[in-house]
Image (tube, rainbow, N blue to C red; front, side, top):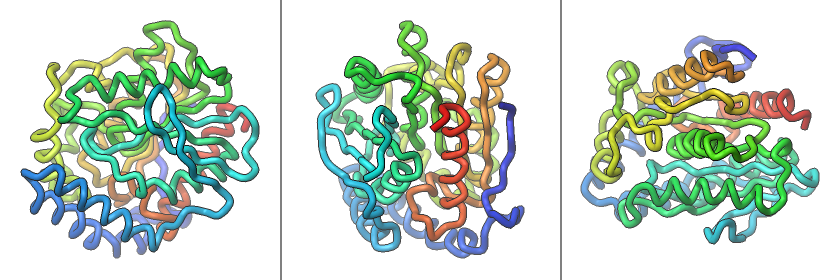
Length: 319
């Protein structure tokens, strides 16, 4: 597998679909309003995101062919997405985003229920501890514990995918690098969506897309820097896995939007994986906002991303 730059729109429009371009002002209004009014109020922003997730649920509903329930994994409350026609043994460990400081559970129902149905796989999403109430590395430790628990419970690594978006993509890469260092079995592959892999903010897109990114932008990065303050150097691989060791990792799929401030984190991580001999696929979706997968399949970009995720999983696992 080589590096591939992919357009999201089925008609290959270089500027993205008309739907996503019309939605950009709305995405910007919602996201930047939250960062503006709750810059010093993390609890307030968490509530704001919960309400936004409830509102978006009217446009992005979970599919009926998937049952959503609660469970426990590695001592963590865990949401389980079980499609009606799940194939026994197929599992996706999904690590949620939110900058390690937020987690609106309802924001994931539509996307993960569709992903579970598309892959015919059980998806488990643990509720890892959040900062600042639980300082770094609590959340990362929980993610690693969840991965180890899945394996300990008898999961065949060849039928396991690890995935996550935003901070969850970061946690996915950190977890796999640590698992490899501790000689744990690798999964069949990993899916990294809108990932942030460098807390030193060294990627060029942090500057070039600061005004173009409707979802995060400069305000979002400032907010995260205020509330997530790990006691580690910004280039420590435990928080910036782009500086970690890639050799021996499983095949990686990176999806990111062209105007994201974090876009080049995915570019750099994919390039480092390829140099290390790891099969990696990089897909850049024109104008797709940060973590657009959660916005619903009314976006052509979401439909295309789901299709390409399924293609990646099929090619790497035979599902």
